[in-house]
Image 1 (cartoon, rainbow over the protein chains, first blue to last red):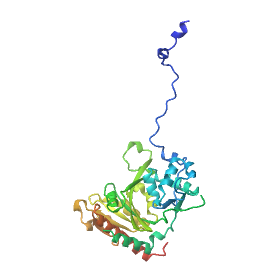
Image 2: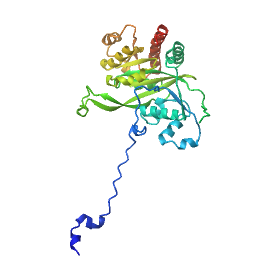
Image 3: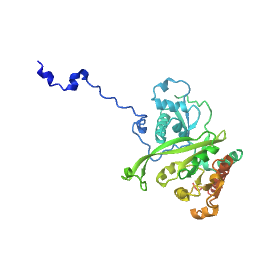
Length: 139
Length: 196
């Protein structure tokens, strides 16, 4: 009964012929940005600006937070004080549009409050005057 | 979560000024000079036409690229916060500017006087959308390659657009450049208050 064995290829005969586990792909350094949004991208028009302020509606350890994916939990945690969309994006290393989508989701779900301001109020005379006075007082 | 409570009181009203210009003209230095936080970087991914990009791999005409924006902020008072966004001045990133310019008080176009053409797309854009802007020539090591009159002539900007020299590393110099932008913003707001 040696004949069949001789048909075994040398490598397999060497005893290392264990079924090779499917190779684990190298985990990417970070998920591709839009994986976090389930592939959703932002429409051209979002009412969230880079400077739009966002704050958490819940604080401290909240059981509701445990149900959220990691990135979303991190966003809520980053918003303990009001912060801008740009700051969330920068501090959590999330792409800007991904940040906007996740913030919108979290706002709809009630975790975050988005502080919309009247679109034209930032450019009115009293506001500009206050900015001028504020800058002049810098030394 | 019906019992909404924000522990730290009201959010400030954010206002912003765009700091535009070509690569390495001193935008981030400008932001850093006056920002109360070390400038942060946010990234946006976008599809851009690759016309004029000298890379064979981009010959398909479109590519996805990541654009980084540096920004900082200055707290004006408890209910008002000024953000400064430094943005790439290349025309191929133009549509990102719509997002930046929306609601902005104005723009500071930072110029290296040895590479004036770098700022053309930004000047064109702000002129087209009617956003108040000021051309600020960064005096590297205190020197300008051209005098301001020549810069104004080369840029062919309106007489009402200030062209000034500043030092991007100097806090008060940056402050004064921003005040020039705000002066333009104020002129527009007082003149065309109902033009919204």
